[in-house]
Length: 181
Image (cartoon, rainbow, N blue to C red):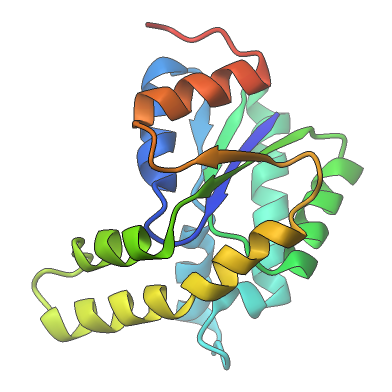
């Protein structure tokens, strides 16, 4: 199975997946952003968003499905996926491959997202780049917040202001996993 943790930048996806992995160590963690970083080294990304590349979406499906099939373990995926067409494309291809996807969306108020984004640093040795990354993340908040209304009906909407442990409890219960305490 795949457990896809979705939400706006700053919603706590990575933190939740880290908490889940501590309690569910047999699960693998796959961050599709790494596929985007590789593609950026190979091809131009005209829009600046690697999710707009069909190749990114295809490779995410191939990697996620391959991990489940090859290793027979659950896969945890922390990734913002706000474009309904892209979400349908990726989840549809995984479903066609016979892989169940449990989709969780972390809902967080916009002001909290801005505060969290402003409080993090991706490239501390390059403040200008850090600010560009923060600005890009903040520019995506509105579309991510609006995406809630277009999510598949089976999506579990979680309060992203709960603690990582509370969120991990909800996800583990939602997928029927036995956590290691």
